[in-house]
Image 1 (cartoon, rainbow, N blue to C red):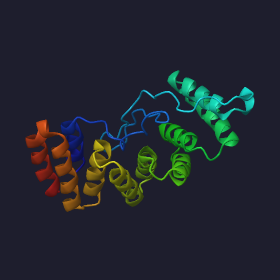
Image 2: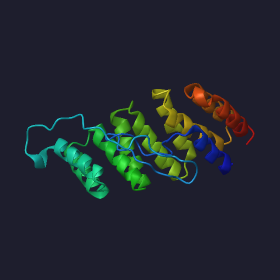
Image 3: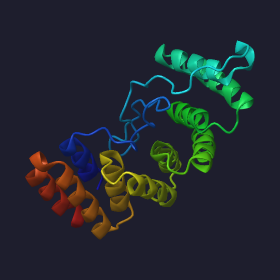
Image 4: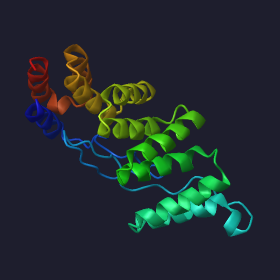
Length: 211
């Protein structure tokens, strides 16, 4: 089964999140390579923060610390980025972007429980944040909780039906759970989104359904 899963990812030629770490900074996403398939992140180049720093002293300004977190992340200083976002979180705990970035960074450092904690906070504050569901799904997957991972990827797919990462990851997880018809449906949707690879994907789907 593992051989087929690796074939699926290679054929599709995608960076999937389960394969992934959340996207952009807000989506600080960078590749992560779990044992099965190439569950990686979609976007390694975080966009600038949306919020402009408020007019206040920098030591009490959460935006200043969020900007510092982005700068540290871009420089490859992950622990310093986490510290900066934690300071921003302490100053403004109900900011979904901060919570998401912390979840992403904890996923990147393989601290799965913290990744679940902070991505969960982001979801609670902003239930339509697709990438937060994806971060949480990856963390649950890495902890071996495929049921929870599937639930989060299903939510991400519901919010963004054309998200190739979530479709791919759901297909893989459905395979692992022996849910062949659901796996077939996911890869059929991938075929629709990747018409140039339709014939190859159809052959792969056939193999998946015979697992």
